[in-house]
Figure (cartoon, rainbow, N blue to C red):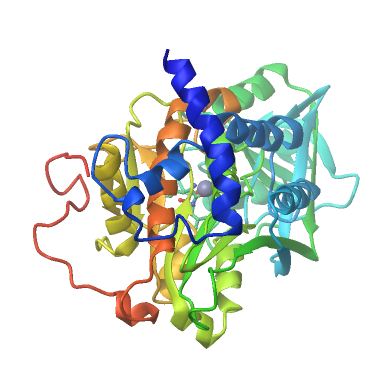
Length: 477
Ligand code: BES
Ligand code: ZN
């Protein structure tokens, strides 16, 4: 019976959507048929989003990004391939799409090979580069590398293997260099999913320096033998943002407000980035598809951001290219980053705001949550994603991210090779996508009193919201 109702509704939607998209007059805002009554399933406007939200499509995007493309590190062919895919999807939905390219900083890239095995490494930011052949030598265990006494004579001309702990990485590297090492491998002193990235402070090593996991360090230690380390600087790299603009309806206003819906599509090295952030990318693509036919008073820009993981480079570039007029018209940024983990404790959808204030994005999301009967939202003070760039320009901005209530913890496989599609929860993608989509559509659909950023600001009312669960008793929304 349920299925029949769903099918009938679905056919109604098919009939309704083009009418609204083309005509836009019979079902426009303010019609009584679309009264925004609160309730578990939302207003009729919310239903345009919730009923059309297709989780399978989101999962297809996530599959393509993670299983078919894989890690999408800023500046790589894989990141570029992802941008092309996003552009094609948006064009299929009927958008005019633009891509803006920007330079990114040089980075070190390299390998550690011993026997037949290539080990996962992290390269110290202060590491030396090698020529194409790399450096090779016996791997010589040198304990904690605390002083000259830890380094056997064989280290001279070979590779020192030292364990993390007790003294700074740089001191170990310095001692190894003094002992004549031509390379340094630092292995972790605790089990972890990814190798440590040994920071050398402001120091520059004369030899290549890499980190490996405890398990890999022990394997190198036990197997002995030689290793080859190759490190080179990757230069002249570019990344790109992909942008689809949904024009506001009619010609009522020549300076419509702008809503930015953003998600970064790059990942950290070795990580397929299913949760971080194929999840946000897939959901924003789906929201762009759903919203395409519906008129809105505000201009909506779907911005797919490159090079987030190397320091919010893409979003800062995007905002830097906005004119003063565009900034003045900018109403809000809804940023989706890590919206679908299946890590069991991450039951809350955090709304991270840089200064923790209950801005318009929070207000819009919490109003949508109320209409949909969803109590998973938590307002939290946090940056660390692309909403920061919009916030810095004075635009109300927030990042949506799944976390554990109370601790604000992320899934343990965050930024690891284990952030794969099997760690994505379809039901959480659906819940978050519908909620955020309903909030964005509600916000974009209406004109708000006053233009520009100052017109939107409203002083927080004390006690109206919960900030940082670790400062007050855990509570949802
Ligand atoms: N997806 C994360 C978002 C995030 C937000 C993680 C808050 C943890 C807490 C994002 O991609 C990320 O990893 N951000 C970096 C910082 C950024 C400036 C490179 C981080 O938090 O380490
Ligand atoms: Zn991320």
